[in-house]
Length: 128
Image (cartoon, helix red, strand yellow):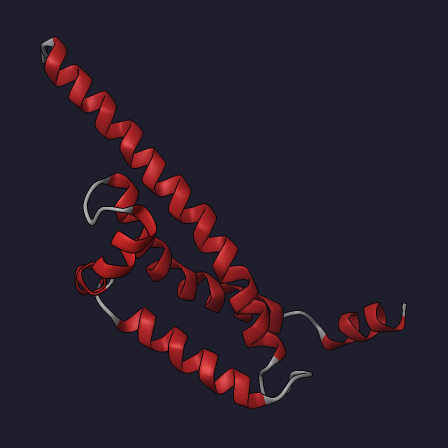
């Protein structure tokens, strides 16, 4: 049976709270950025209602951000993290690269989900 002293217990509890904070904050902000990105990608697709030039730009940005390994992205966005959070380390500073990494993935999921909607349903909604 494990027996942890008070200091170790406090460190474990603090680590759990910091992990939950980073996860929930980056998930929320990732969806705040990813939902509009996915909608824009679906709307500006070649079968969409807006010009495909916007799609090409968003597509390139999304693909580039998705292909960068997280540790490299973490280092690349240190100046942005310092500007937004005021420091380049810690749980609050980790949220910035997590959001930047998660938003393109969420955007692609939203785009693919919107593309799966039957065109008849879209026409019915437009006619209403």
